[in-house]
Amino acid sequence: MMDSFPNGRGTSAAMAAQMLHDSVLRSRRSSPGDDESPMDHAPVLQKKAPVVIPAPILRPQHVYAPVAPLGMLTLGVFSKNKEETDEEKEIKKYAVGPDVEGPGLCAAILTFVSLVLVLVTMPLSLCVTVKVVQEYERAVVFRLGRLRSGGAKGPGLFFIMPCVDTYKKVDLRTVSFDVPPQEVLSRDSVTVSVDAVVYYRVSNPTMATNNIEDYSHSTRLLAATTLRNVLGTKNLAEILSEREIISQVMQNALDEATDPWGVKAERVEIKDVRLPVQLQRAMAAEAEAAREARAKVIAAEGEQKASRALREAASVIAESPSALQLRYLQTLNSIAAEHNSTIIFPMPMDIMSHFMGRKGGGKMDKQA
Image (cartoon, rainbow, N blue to C red; front, top):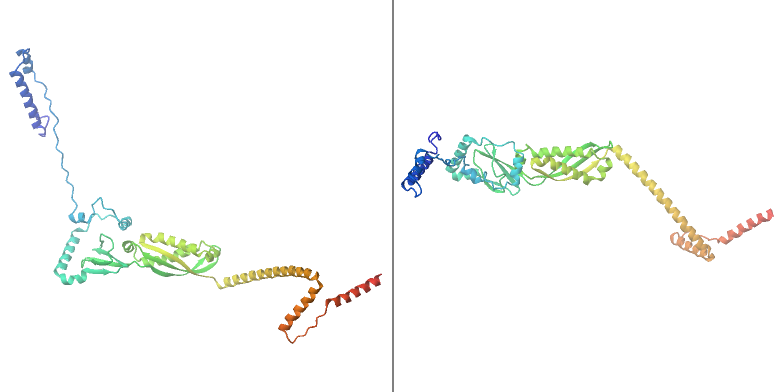
Protein backbone atom coordinates (compact mmCIF):
# COMPACT_ATOMS: atom_id res chain seq x y z
CA MET A 1 0.00 0.00 0.00
CA MET A 2 2.89 2.30 0.61
CA ASP A 3 4.11 1.78 -2.96
CA SER A 4 1.05 3.52 -4.32
CA PHE A 5 1.83 6.48 -2.17
CA PRO A 6 5.57 6.97 -2.13
CA ASN A 7 5.29 10.24 -0.30
CA GLY A 8 3.23 8.75 2.48
CA ARG A 9 0.05 10.40 1.37
CA GLY A 10 -3.17 8.39 1.69
CA THR A 11 -1.75 5.80 4.21
CA SER A 12 -4.51 6.41 6.72
CA ALA A 13 -7.18 6.09 4.04
CA ALA A 14 -5.77 2.73 2.84
CA MET A 15 -5.62 1.34 6.37
CA ALA A 16 -9.20 2.35 7.01
CA ALA A 17 -10.33 0.59 3.84
CA GLN A 18 -8.47 -2.61 4.80
CA MET A 19 -9.98 -2.63 8.27
CA LEU A 20 -13.46 -2.23 6.83
CA HIS A 21 -12.91 -5.18 4.48
CA ASP A 22 -11.69 -7.42 7.31
CA SER A 23 -14.71 -6.62 9.45
CA VAL A 24 -17.05 -7.58 6.60
CA LEU A 25 -15.31 -10.95 6.20
CA ARG A 26 -15.55 -11.69 9.92
CA SER A 27 -19.24 -11.01 9.95
CA ARG A 28 -19.81 -13.46 7.11
CA ARG A 29 -17.83 -16.24 8.83
CA SER A 30 -19.57 -15.82 12.17
CA SER A 31 -23.18 -15.87 10.89
CA PRO A 32 -23.65 -17.91 7.69
CA GLY A 33 -27.12 -18.11 6.17
CA ASP A 34 -29.47 -21.17 6.17
CA ASP A 35 -29.01 -21.96 2.53
CA GLU A 36 -25.33 -21.38 2.65
CA SER A 37 -22.73 -24.08 3.25
CA PRO A 38 -19.25 -23.76 4.74
CA MET A 39 -17.89 -24.53 1.31
CA ASP A 40 -19.37 -21.29 -0.01
CA HIS A 41 -16.96 -19.41 2.11
CA ALA A 42 -13.91 -21.26 0.98
CA PRO A 43 -13.35 -19.28 -2.14
CA VAL A 44 -13.72 -16.18 -0.05
CA LEU A 45 -10.95 -17.39 2.24
CA GLN A 46 -8.77 -18.46 -0.62
CA LYS A 47 -9.36 -15.43 -2.85
CA LYS A 48 -9.18 -11.92 -1.62
CA ALA A 49 -11.40 -9.34 -3.25
CA PRO A 50 -9.57 -6.40 -4.80
CA VAL A 51 -9.29 -3.55 -2.43
CA VAL A 52 -10.62 -0.27 -3.79
CA ILE A 53 -8.64 2.59 -2.39
CA PRO A 54 -10.45 5.91 -2.51
CA ALA A 55 -8.64 8.89 -3.86
CA PRO A 56 -6.82 10.84 -1.20
CA ILE A 57 -8.40 14.04 -0.09
CA LEU A 58 -5.99 16.85 -0.77
CA ARG A 59 -6.10 19.74 1.57
CA PRO A 60 -6.13 23.24 0.00
CA GLN A 61 -2.74 24.84 -0.05
CA HIS A 62 -2.39 28.33 1.41
CA VAL A 63 -0.93 30.98 -0.88
CA TYR A 64 0.86 33.73 0.95
CA ALA A 65 0.75 37.13 -0.73
CA PRO A 66 2.40 40.31 0.50
CA VAL A 67 0.05 42.60 2.36
CA ALA A 68 0.05 46.33 1.71
CA PRO A 69 1.44 48.51 4.50
CA LEU A 70 -0.98 50.09 6.88
CA GLY A 71 -0.19 53.60 5.66
CA MET A 72 -0.92 52.65 2.06
CA LEU A 73 -4.23 51.08 3.05
CA THR A 74 -5.12 54.18 5.00
CA LEU A 75 -4.51 56.40 2.00
CA GLY A 76 -6.68 54.11 -0.11
CA VAL A 77 -4.03 53.42 -2.74
CA PHE A 78 -4.92 49.71 -3.02
CA SER A 79 -8.65 50.22 -2.57
CA LYS A 80 -10.63 49.02 -5.57
CA ASN A 81 -13.75 50.95 -4.74
CA LYS A 82 -12.03 54.35 -4.66
CA GLU A 83 -12.79 56.50 -7.69
CA GLU A 84 -9.97 58.49 -9.14
CA THR A 85 -10.41 62.23 -9.41
CA ASP A 86 -9.95 64.15 -12.65
CA GLU A 87 -6.70 65.63 -11.38
CA GLU A 88 -5.24 62.20 -10.60
CA LYS A 89 -6.25 60.93 -14.02
CA GLU A 90 -4.53 63.87 -15.69
CA ILE A 91 -1.40 63.31 -13.59
CA LYS A 92 -1.30 59.63 -14.57
CA LYS A 93 -1.92 60.54 -18.19
CA TYR A 94 1.15 62.76 -18.41
CA ALA A 95 3.31 60.97 -15.84
CA VAL A 96 6.80 59.87 -16.88
CA GLY A 97 6.47 56.31 -15.58
CA PRO A 98 5.52 54.18 -12.56
CA ASP A 99 7.58 54.43 -9.39
CA VAL A 100 8.88 50.89 -8.90
CA GLU A 101 11.56 51.41 -6.28
CA GLY A 102 9.59 53.64 -3.90
CA PRO A 103 11.03 56.30 -1.62
CA GLY A 104 13.67 53.98 -0.19
CA LEU A 105 15.15 53.48 3.26
CA CYS A 106 17.20 56.67 3.23
CA ALA A 107 14.10 58.78 2.53
CA ALA A 108 12.24 57.07 5.34
CA ILE A 109 15.09 57.73 7.76
CA LEU A 110 15.31 61.40 6.79
CA THR A 111 11.55 61.80 7.17
CA PHE A 112 11.65 60.19 10.60
CA VAL A 113 14.51 62.45 11.69
CA SER A 114 12.60 65.49 10.46
CA LEU A 115 9.51 64.39 12.38
CA VAL A 116 11.55 63.92 15.53
CA LEU A 117 13.04 67.36 15.05
CA VAL A 118 9.58 68.87 14.75
CA LEU A 119 8.39 67.12 17.91
CA VAL A 120 11.43 68.17 19.90
CA THR A 121 11.13 71.82 18.91
CA MET A 122 7.34 71.82 18.93
CA PRO A 123 6.57 75.41 19.97
CA LEU A 124 9.04 76.92 17.52
CA SER A 125 8.65 74.39 14.71
CA LEU A 126 5.10 75.56 13.97
CA CYS A 127 6.52 78.69 12.37
CA VAL A 128 8.29 76.48 9.84
CA THR A 129 5.82 73.65 9.34
CA VAL A 130 2.58 75.64 9.05
CA LYS A 131 2.07 77.49 5.76
CA VAL A 132 -0.84 79.52 4.41
CA VAL A 133 -2.02 79.99 0.83
CA GLN A 134 -4.66 82.45 -0.30
CA GLU A 135 -8.04 81.59 -1.79
CA TYR A 136 -6.75 82.18 -5.32
CA GLU A 137 -3.52 80.16 -4.81
CA ARG A 138 -2.51 76.52 -4.59
CA ALA A 139 0.68 74.93 -3.24
CA VAL A 140 2.34 71.95 -4.94
CA VAL A 141 4.39 70.08 -2.29
CA PHE A 142 7.42 67.87 -3.00
CA ARG A 143 8.96 65.53 -0.42
CA LEU A 144 12.59 64.75 -1.21
CA GLY A 145 11.92 65.58 -4.85
CA ARG A 146 8.77 63.45 -5.10
CA LEU A 147 5.29 64.87 -5.62
CA ARG A 148 3.14 64.24 -2.59
CA SER A 149 -0.15 62.43 -3.03
CA GLY A 150 -3.39 64.34 -2.85
CA GLY A 151 -2.57 66.98 -5.43
CA ALA A 152 -2.13 70.66 -4.70
CA LYS A 153 -2.75 71.98 -1.20
CA GLY A 154 -4.95 74.88 -0.26
CA PRO A 155 -6.57 77.25 0.14
CA GLY A 156 -5.85 77.85 3.82
CA LEU A 157 -3.42 76.06 6.13
CA PHE A 158 -1.22 73.11 5.23
CA PHE A 159 1.75 71.44 6.90
CA ILE A 160 5.20 70.63 5.56
CA MET A 161 8.14 68.79 7.07
CA PRO A 162 11.28 70.91 7.44
CA CYS A 163 14.40 69.92 5.52
CA VAL A 164 12.56 67.32 3.41
CA ASP A 165 9.56 69.19 1.92
CA THR A 166 9.57 72.00 -0.62
CA TYR A 167 6.56 73.69 -2.16
CA LYS A 168 5.72 76.05 -4.99
CA LYS A 169 2.78 78.45 -5.09
CA VAL A 170 0.69 78.74 -8.24
CA ASP A 171 -1.70 81.63 -8.88
CA LEU A 172 -5.10 80.58 -10.28
CA ARG A 173 -6.32 84.06 -11.26
CA THR A 174 -6.82 85.07 -14.88
CA VAL A 175 -3.72 86.68 -16.38
CA SER A 176 -3.70 88.95 -19.45
CA PHE A 177 -0.79 89.96 -21.63
CA ASP A 178 -0.24 91.84 -24.89
CA VAL A 179 1.08 89.91 -27.84
CA PRO A 180 3.85 92.00 -29.46
CA PRO A 181 2.96 93.42 -32.91
CA GLN A 182 3.58 90.75 -35.52
CA GLU A 183 4.58 91.61 -39.10
CA VAL A 184 2.47 89.15 -41.06
CA LEU A 185 2.32 88.50 -44.81
CA SER A 186 -1.29 87.78 -45.67
CA ARG A 187 -2.45 85.31 -48.30
CA ASP A 188 -2.83 88.07 -50.90
CA SER A 189 0.79 89.23 -50.31
CA VAL A 190 0.02 92.27 -48.15
CA THR A 191 2.23 93.05 -45.15
CA VAL A 192 0.25 93.98 -42.05
CA SER A 193 1.18 94.50 -38.39
CA VAL A 194 -1.26 92.92 -35.93
CA ASP A 195 -1.23 92.82 -32.13
CA ALA A 196 -3.61 91.01 -29.78
CA VAL A 197 -4.51 90.43 -26.12
CA VAL A 198 -4.65 86.96 -24.55
CA TYR A 199 -6.41 86.00 -21.29
CA TYR A 200 -5.48 82.70 -19.63
CA ARG A 201 -5.50 81.00 -16.23
CA VAL A 202 -3.99 77.91 -14.60
CA SER A 203 -6.55 75.08 -14.43
CA ASN A 204 -4.27 72.36 -12.96
CA PRO A 205 -1.46 73.54 -10.64
CA THR A 206 0.22 70.13 -10.53
CA MET A 207 0.54 69.85 -14.30
CA ALA A 208 1.60 73.48 -14.61
CA THR A 209 4.45 72.79 -12.19
CA ASN A 210 5.61 69.36 -13.35
CA ASN A 211 4.96 69.31 -17.10
CA ILE A 212 6.57 72.61 -18.10
CA GLU A 213 9.33 74.80 -16.74
CA ASP A 214 7.74 78.25 -17.18
CA TYR A 215 4.13 78.09 -18.31
CA SER A 216 3.74 81.89 -18.49
CA HIS A 217 6.68 82.48 -20.84
CA SER A 218 5.77 79.46 -22.96
CA THR A 219 2.17 80.64 -23.32
CA ARG A 220 3.34 84.07 -24.50
CA LEU A 221 5.62 82.58 -27.15
CA LEU A 222 2.92 80.18 -28.30
CA ALA A 223 0.37 83.02 -28.59
CA ALA A 224 2.71 85.04 -30.84
CA THR A 225 3.39 82.01 -33.05
CA THR A 226 -0.29 81.11 -33.27
CA LEU A 227 -1.18 84.67 -34.26
CA ARG A 228 1.29 84.57 -37.16
CA ASN A 229 0.09 81.16 -38.32
CA VAL A 230 -3.59 82.07 -38.27
CA LEU A 231 -3.20 85.44 -40.02
CA GLY A 232 -1.00 83.91 -42.71
CA THR A 233 -4.02 81.99 -44.05
CA LYS A 234 -6.30 85.05 -44.35
CA ASN A 235 -6.70 87.78 -46.94
CA LEU A 236 -6.45 91.46 -46.04
CA ALA A 237 -10.21 91.89 -46.33
CA GLU A 238 -10.79 88.91 -44.03
CA ILE A 239 -8.29 90.24 -41.46
CA LEU A 240 -10.06 93.59 -41.37
CA SER A 241 -13.64 92.25 -41.28
CA GLU A 242 -13.47 88.85 -39.53
CA ARG A 243 -11.75 89.68 -36.26
CA GLU A 244 -14.14 87.64 -34.13
CA ILE A 245 -13.61 84.50 -36.23
CA ILE A 246 -9.82 84.93 -36.07
CA SER A 247 -9.99 85.38 -32.29
CA GLN A 248 -12.06 82.19 -31.90
CA VAL A 249 -9.66 80.17 -34.06
CA MET A 250 -6.69 81.44 -32.04
CA GLN A 251 -8.39 80.59 -28.74
CA ASN A 252 -9.14 77.02 -29.84
CA ALA A 253 -5.56 76.50 -31.05
CA LEU A 254 -4.07 77.90 -27.83
CA ASP A 255 -6.43 75.89 -25.63
CA GLU A 256 -5.55 72.65 -27.39
CA ALA A 257 -1.80 73.30 -27.20
CA THR A 258 -1.74 74.40 -23.54
CA ASP A 259 -4.02 71.64 -22.22
CA PRO A 260 -1.08 69.31 -21.28
CA TRP A 261 0.45 72.24 -19.36
CA GLY A 262 -2.61 72.74 -17.14
CA VAL A 263 -3.30 76.16 -18.71
CA LYS A 264 -6.71 77.27 -20.01
CA ALA A 265 -6.94 79.99 -22.71
CA GLU A 266 -10.10 81.91 -21.87
CA ARG A 267 -10.21 84.70 -24.46
CA VAL A 268 -8.23 86.16 -27.37
CA GLU A 269 -8.89 89.61 -28.84
CA ILE A 270 -7.34 91.33 -31.89
CA LYS A 271 -6.39 94.86 -30.79
CA ASP A 272 -5.19 96.67 -33.88
CA VAL A 273 -4.33 96.04 -37.53
CA ARG A 274 -1.80 98.53 -38.94
CA LEU A 275 -1.14 98.86 -42.68
CA PRO A 276 1.89 100.37 -44.47
CA VAL A 277 1.70 104.12 -45.27
CA GLN A 278 1.75 103.60 -49.04
CA LEU A 279 -1.04 101.06 -48.81
CA GLN A 280 -3.05 103.44 -46.65
CA ARG A 281 -2.67 106.21 -49.26
CA ALA A 282 -3.68 103.86 -52.08
CA MET A 283 -6.70 102.66 -50.14
CA ALA A 284 -7.64 106.26 -49.28
CA ALA A 285 -7.41 107.31 -52.94
CA GLU A 286 -9.48 104.33 -53.96
CA ALA A 287 -12.10 105.11 -51.36
CA GLU A 288 -12.16 108.81 -52.36
CA ALA A 289 -12.62 107.97 -56.04
CA ALA A 290 -15.40 105.54 -55.20
CA ARG A 291 -17.14 108.18 -53.10
CA GLU A 292 -16.84 110.83 -55.86
CA ALA A 293 -18.26 108.45 -58.42
CA ARG A 294 -21.11 107.60 -56.12
CA ALA A 295 -21.74 111.34 -55.48
CA LYS A 296 -21.91 112.07 -59.22
CA VAL A 297 -24.34 109.25 -59.75
CA ILE A 298 -26.51 110.56 -56.93
CA ALA A 299 -26.39 114.14 -58.34
CA ALA A 300 -27.37 112.90 -61.80
CA GLU A 301 -30.27 110.94 -60.36
CA GLY A 302 -31.36 114.13 -58.51
CA GLU A 303 -31.25 116.22 -61.71
CA GLN A 304 -33.28 113.60 -63.50
CA LYS A 305 -35.94 113.60 -60.82
CA ALA A 306 -35.93 117.45 -60.72
CA SER A 307 -36.44 117.74 -64.47
CA ARG A 308 -39.37 115.35 -64.31
CA ALA A 309 -40.89 117.42 -61.52
CA LEU A 310 -40.39 120.67 -63.51
CA ARG A 311 -42.04 119.14 -66.53
CA GLU A 312 -45.05 118.17 -64.47
CA ALA A 313 -45.15 121.68 -62.92
CA ALA A 314 -44.96 123.33 -66.35
CA SER A 315 -47.85 121.25 -67.60
CA VAL A 316 -49.91 122.30 -64.58
CA ILE A 317 -49.04 126.02 -65.05
CA ALA A 318 -49.83 125.86 -68.78
CA GLU A 319 -53.40 124.89 -68.01
CA SER A 320 -54.08 128.27 -66.30
CA PRO A 321 -52.49 131.60 -67.49
CA SER A 322 -53.09 133.22 -64.10
CA ALA A 323 -50.93 130.61 -62.42
CA LEU A 324 -47.84 132.08 -64.06
CA GLN A 325 -48.66 135.54 -62.64
CA LEU A 326 -49.08 134.04 -59.16
CA ARG A 327 -45.70 132.38 -59.56
CA TYR A 328 -44.18 135.77 -60.42
CA LEU A 329 -45.65 137.37 -57.32
CA GLN A 330 -44.35 134.52 -55.14
CA THR A 331 -40.85 134.93 -56.56
CA LEU A 332 -40.95 138.70 -55.89
CA ASN A 333 -42.03 138.08 -52.31
CA SER A 334 -39.11 135.71 -51.66
CA ILE A 335 -36.56 138.07 -53.27
CA ALA A 336 -37.84 141.08 -51.32
CA ALA A 337 -37.51 139.17 -48.06
CA GLU A 338 -33.87 138.20 -48.68
CA HIS A 339 -32.48 141.18 -50.66
CA ASN A 340 -34.24 144.42 -49.69
CA SER A 341 -32.03 146.73 -51.81
CA THR A 342 -32.76 144.87 -55.02
CA ILE A 343 -35.61 146.11 -57.20
CA ILE A 344 -36.97 143.82 -59.83
CA PHE A 345 -39.47 144.81 -62.48
CA PRO A 346 -41.25 141.76 -63.77
CA MET A 347 -41.96 141.69 -67.44
CA PRO A 348 -44.95 139.72 -68.56
CA MET A 349 -44.20 136.85 -70.84
CA ASP A 350 -47.05 137.93 -73.11
CA ILE A 351 -44.99 140.87 -74.36
CA MET A 352 -42.16 138.62 -75.46
CA SER A 353 -44.58 136.23 -77.03
CA HIS A 354 -46.23 139.15 -78.85
CA PHE A 355 -42.92 140.31 -80.33
CA MET A 356 -41.89 136.79 -81.13
CA GLY A 357 -45.23 136.23 -82.76
CA ARG A 358 -44.93 139.34 -84.97
CA LYS A 359 -41.40 138.45 -85.99
CA GLY A 360 -42.48 135.00 -86.92
CA GLY A 361 -45.49 136.45 -88.80
CA GLY A 362 -43.27 138.88 -90.86
CA LYS A 363 -41.08 136.01 -91.98
CA MET A 364 -44.12 134.11 -93.03
CA ASP A 365 -45.36 137.16 -95.02
CA LYS A 366 -42.04 137.46 -96.82
CA GLN A 367 -42.07 133.79 -97.63
CA ALA A 368 -45.57 134.17 -99.00
